[in-house]
Length: 396
Image (cartoon, rainbow, N blue to C red; front, side, top):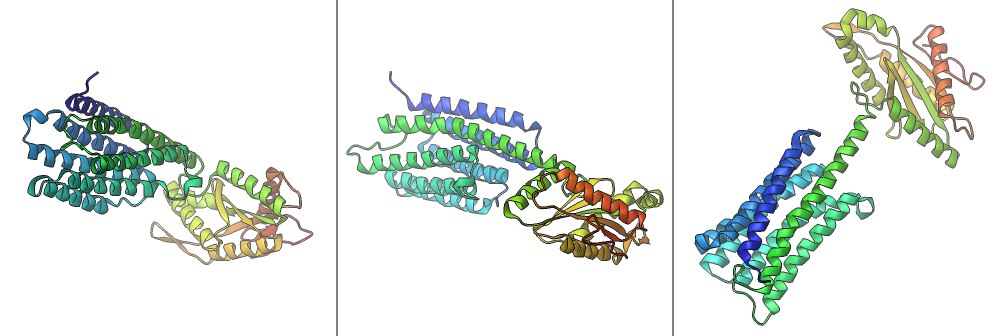
């Protein structure tokens, strides 16, 4: 069955425009950055559709219009796709690099198409620009290494590699074929295959982009379900998961694991005096004070109200007591300014350490909680250890 460049281009234009509409319709939900990336990808498809439409309408266009306009839209679409993908991945956008590559590529194509016509050099110049833009996408996909690449990333890497190989194949055919076509609009098997395969790319790349978008949403929803909305530290669910993992690691390695249960003293009076808005400011300041005393490996989380937990890997009970006392002193010596009033906050802390071979996270946290209530009963603003035969109360 005979093929026509115009027909293939028109199909590609309609397909790209339909994909752009569907992606745009899917931007109603999701986090802001991911939503913006999807909108930008939809815009890139719409621009690409314009390029295909110009090729389909070549009979009504001047050759210079088709050459300069079509390549400008094509390079612009590739540049927008770079920014969209990197935005979705949370990588530096590199939009200046994409813009520079697009402008240089378009100028080279224009030079070898209008000023000094040479079809093969024109294709080489344009191909180099597109491969450079493809690399900007692949570089973002390769962050973290191939071994850590998700399924969607792996699919996108494969598709971008195939896109680069398609350009390599086209240039090879032009330089080594005895009768290469004189232009992309000339009826020729190489041109038919190139236009056909190029027109199929938006569909596959858009599907892979949607897979990556879905992975991003799932990952962000997973994280949101495990972060305390007020303080930004781990919530109870995340703390249980982290404590289970750290306890298992401690059992395998034979290393200690310390747990601190921290509670703000007389916090109800803070809420009564300053309201819940002022109480929230105090909790944020408390988290900041706790964080300043911790190592990178330590984990802090909120289990509810004004109660927090610190998980300290490679920390014995005696070392955990030292850490707890440092937190207590830091909080006590840090005056807080709430609604123009200076507030002196103190904390009570219960300390426990995992026993050799212990696997019950609940029992470990319960011991730290029992020590916390012991510190409360002993007068507050103090540190108390759960295992009293190893260490006792540390008074304020």
